[in-house]
Length: 309
Image (cartoon, rainbow, N blue to C red; front, side, top):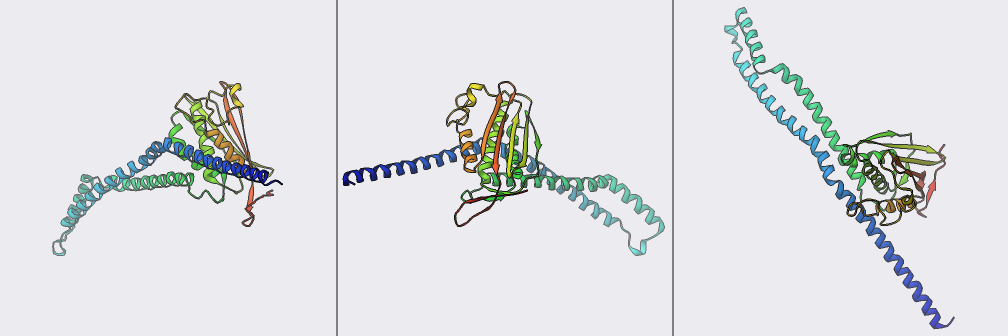
């Protein structure tokens, strides 16, 4: 081969490789930007969800503090009433019993003892709710994106529902039809991003009161997931463009047009498929199919598709 042709070919290949690396880097930045935009959009809602249980836990603890102060005063006054051994008579006992009863009524001791148990139980429930919300946010934005993890897809969906719930709860009801699913290797934070996009889009499509139905199914070594809403639907002319980058049916300033295209890429990278069915005025259904990955070959980095029966 002529030296000039060789150099020309080499330079062309080098330029293509460089452009590919730049495109790959740009794609990564777009994914990150979309994710950060989505998290930023929901940050206020998540803070609100956390503040709710923290609010009543704080209130309950303050009440408990006042109750304990009353109990301490009750005990001090009761102690002062106990007669000495030399003064103890039957009459004293009757008088003491009456005075103790009056003191219990004065300080509302029976109510305090009953309500204290309820306050503690409610506080524990509140803290458990905080723990679930924080865990869901942690799982959603988990930094370990490089390695796949073995997870249950139902749990991934639940984590995402907890994150987006404050965004949609005032006008949407969520119905869950979860099948028993085997665990599969995947990037759970990436799939959570897909689920979040679909849930928020469904919420935006419902203008007043509506229903979002989430269905999972396991069949033929695949997990099938459906997000169905009874919102405004999508015009037929737009359906073929939904997964195109920067295409959006939302008003200017309300959508980047990257959510569904990034979701498509994530599902494709998991060797899955994502499809949409919609009818204007009747709602939309997104259907996802993911193969079960039973194990990873650490040497080759290739997935091993399961044969689960």
